[in-house]
Image (tube, rainbow, N blue to C red; front, side, top):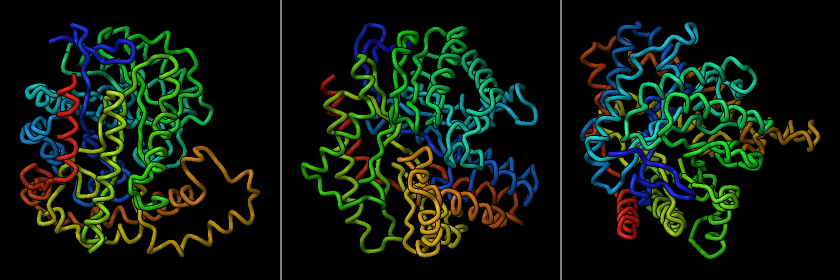
Amino acid sequence: MSFLKVSGTKIVDKDGKEVILRGAGLGGWMNMENFISGYPGCEFQIRAALADAVGSEKSEFFFDKFLEYFFTEDDAIFFKSSGLNCIRLPFNYRHFEDDMNPRVLKTGGFKHLDRVIDLCAKHGIYTILDLHTAPGGQNTDWHADAGTHIANFWNHKDFQDRTLWLWKELAEHYKDNTWIAGYNPLNEPTDPYHTRVIDFYDQVYKVIRAVDPDHALFFDGNTFASDFSYFGDVYKKWENSAYAIHDYTLFGFPSSPEQYVGNETQQRRLRRSYEKKREWMDKAGLCVWNGEWGPVYARKEYDGEKTEAINEERYTVLKDQLAIYNKDRLSWSIWLYKDIGFQGMVFVSRETPYMTLFKDFLAKKHRLAIDAWGADETHIRSVYQPLVDLIKQEVPERYQAIYPAPVWKLQDRIGRLSRNILLSEFMVKEWAQHFVGKTETELDEIASSFKFNNCLFRDGLNKILKDNASLVAESA
């Protein structure tokens, strides 16, 4: 077994044979996300709230069991059977370092990360290590786990220095593991000046290469892995490196501007959006990796009779995106492998203790559009529209587009601050109260809801992924 390498536009093995990485992201695991596992707000908030509600010992017990059950050997076996060969492993820096004790390695963070890397290796699955959350928050969204819409990672050098320190520790630990396809040093940066991200990448490249000359690096573009317009010729300094886009399309979400039927115009829009993201790499002859993409899906408890029709439309989007990727022999990692029913290849059954316990709370979250990801604002739009109208009326139009516009439009920014940050903050303790009075046995049962044998399969999604993985494998 040898390291995979980046050679020109391709990822190759030791013999120079092309390896196309096809897989999924294990989102919601070592970097928990609200829409994936059902909590409001950010991970650091719910961890603190649960410790306050049931005590630190029980809280740590629950989260440890959650991490254990979320991905086991049964998951690895199923994943491999789908014809997929790579899992992107997002993790939160807080597993390895404490804000109140910086630059002191928490070795316990390796417990579950090592376990899943080894399970994947056992079943012939590569992994890519993805620092999804960095100190201070490297992007403006909730999954940076900063509790704010300001990406302070870019405003404080010490946040960046701590991240460089962490990558040195990670590289030391994993430098000899050939089943790790590479490192994804920073997920979805949003640097409003566009140059600090390049400076940081240059530093992290040097730090990692000082201890690990072999693993490939996957650098996300700026502005949520979409913008390489400021990268220039920096690639000449970064050997064995690929560049990551995240190719989400509005056609795969409730906010789609129109019904997707796969006509020529819509397919051209899909292709153009994708080509624009990789334009810099194509001009320079560089390797592209699509680190995140994929539609979300309707759920019967919220979408009723429309559920099947909506999901068939989303599968059409999925197939048309894959047709583009297959033509380019693109390596990709769909978002995501497992959740509570919105986007995952597998999802927790509604009959499990966790889903039963939170049934009403989850319905409330959905109605109030607490989660940013794929939110349906139908029920509460009238509440927030006056605030949108006020800003449009009082703020000159030329000042309304604040970075990361146009990715965040005015109404999106207001929703992020008012619902996903402010309103969700008031619901954090309510979420934690569901655990009060539970014994460790009951907490274990709740956490076990995320076990593979307690999950259902999104058959339409899985069949499409398996069919396309086979097509690419046969043409290799």
